[in-house]
Structures are given as structure tokens and as C-alpha cells.
Image 1 (cartoon, rainbow, N blue to C red):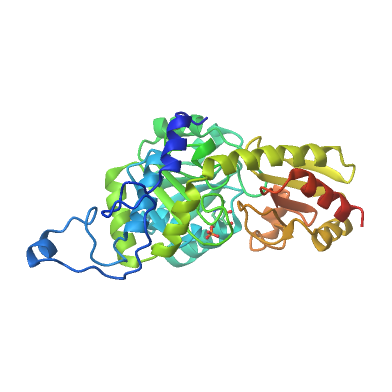
Image 2 (tube, rainbow, N blue to C red):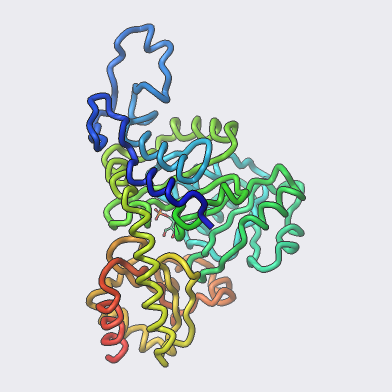
Length: 374
Ligand SMILES: Cc1ncc(COP(=O)(O)O)c(C=O)c1O
């Protein structure tokens, strides 16, 4: 899926290098909310891509993250913001009252909460697609459709979509409809949606990009320079930008993204093997890459036993970090999704979502075993 693997590893390893004017190898942390103008002439003509004025507009640390993410996702511009939801808000900021959006029916629960807000307060229309037939998706496009919003693999049902086929079909039918993909689960190590024909990519950088459960961040990458300029105006004005310290942490984490993703995958495959042979596990959902695994247990007593007794794995929301986390989407990440929709998708009280970390997989398997045996 991911072309130029060596190139990606090099971009990651050297993220932020060669940017410091004092020749520091690792980009230092710039904690300043504002920057001195050497002259009035400079203030009149400054280039926001090279010079700094005020940290809402740009900081050296945030720019280094944005430059790296632009390269990794092969976009025209990237924006580093304060959370994944802030990236989604920025992505949808070009919509106007009366516009129509089609989204996959299985997404992070916060997306649906935000879509409802936009529908109720701004009169933007949302409809859903189940991810199965591309013809059905095309049939949902109307003269008002501006955006198609996908997650692949989706959270938590692991629906996987063929971005390339969808992009071709949508752009052939409606060249003006934009295709956005939330690439949080696979990251550019395994999937580069813009290369496959999408127009917009978003990430919750809180997850794999930062990978250590110690910051909240979001990334938006876009292909079209005109749309990038519209996003830039919105972003420097509203100021949901990622601060310098979190940008510094994120850049440092990106350097190990490829090795982390490979190990997450290797560990997840071992966990999947274990889950598949345990009689108490009735179904395992795994998209073949990455560290996210969803599975069903036979009953809620077993769910309770696992969540109350795991010791190596932590019962907590979020995902993508070095430490393994387990969550119950029905009561946590997807609690706000309508009951009828959860039922249709299969988000039930016996579904668990495991973010497989970088611990020794034997310890993780033994932990699940001892918790299931309670
Ligand atoms: C796939 C996906 N996208 C977006 C988000 C939102 O990101 P954040 O929590 O950083 O706002 C999440 C959060 O879990 C997610 O799982």
C-alpha cells in the first residue's frame, strides 16, 4: 500500500533536522508566544512560512511537524492542531448551510456528535453509507454534496475500504466532491490516502503519531492549494493550533513511527491468533495491519471479568500508544451514537476494542487469559 518505504523511514528519522539556525541536530523547543521584528520593513513584508511573529500563526516546532506530515502524506500543506476533533472541525470548516456530507456509518463516536451539532446549528445535512457498494455511495451524491467522510479501518468495527476505487468513482461522477479519510488507525506507514486519490487526510495525533499517551493533537493534510489557503485563514484566526511543547513531543515521537507501527502489527497478529482459538471469543475483527483489534465475548460477565482483572493491559479509552489499552466502545467511545445505529453496526456490550501496545505479546496473552479465567 505504501510506496517509497525507505523514503518514509528517512523522513521520519530526520524529522525536524537541519531546521535550526544554530545547527542543533534535534530541533530545540521554542517557548515564546511572540517574536521580535528586526525592522518595520520586515514587519510589513514578512513571510509567514519562514519568519515568525506570533505563535498562533506559526512556531518553529509546529512548522517542523507540519512540514514532516506534508511530506509523509504527500500533500500540499499540513496543519497541526490541538486534537483530532480540532482537525475534523478544521476539515469541515469550508462547509456552508445547505451543503450535504456523506459519511461512513462507522466512525469515532465524536464525529457523529459533531455532525449532529453542525446539522442542528448550521443546517448542514449528513447522510450515511455502510461502506459496502460504491454504486450505493454514488447514488447518495446530490447536487448539494460537497464532502465524503471515511475512516478505514473504521472505529471500532474495522470496516476496510478501497480508497483508490472510491476516489476514482466519486471524482468521475462528481469532480467537485471532496473525499476525506481519517488515517488515524494505519498512519502513513501503511496507508497514504492522498496518493490513492483522496483530497483531505486527518489524524488524531493523540494516537499512533504521538504514540506515548502523553499528548492530545490533530493533523489535517490537504492536496489542493486553494483549499489549503482557506484552511490556513481559518486556522490562524480561530487558533486551535498545536502548542510548541506538544509539537516538540510529537516530532520526537514521529521519528520512531515506522518501527512502532511494525511492532504494533507483529504483536497484534499474535493476539489475534490467541483470541481466535479461545472458545470464549466469538468473533475477532482485525484489518491485517496495525495494532487495533476488536473482539466479541460470549456474554457481559466475561466482559466484566476482563475489564476488571487485566493487569498488564490498562482499561482506558484512547489507542495507539506504547502501552496496551482495552475499552468497551458501547459505554465509552461510542456511547453517544444512537442505540439503533450501534445495534445495526454491532457495537454491543459484548464488544471490546484492544489497542495492542509494544509490551511482550506473551505477557499480553497471559494477561487476557488470566482475566478471562476469573
Ligand atoms: C479514528 C479517530 N479519529 C478521531 C478521533 C478524535 O481524536 P482526539 O481524541 O485526538 O480529539 C479519535 C479519538 O479516539 C479516533 O479514534
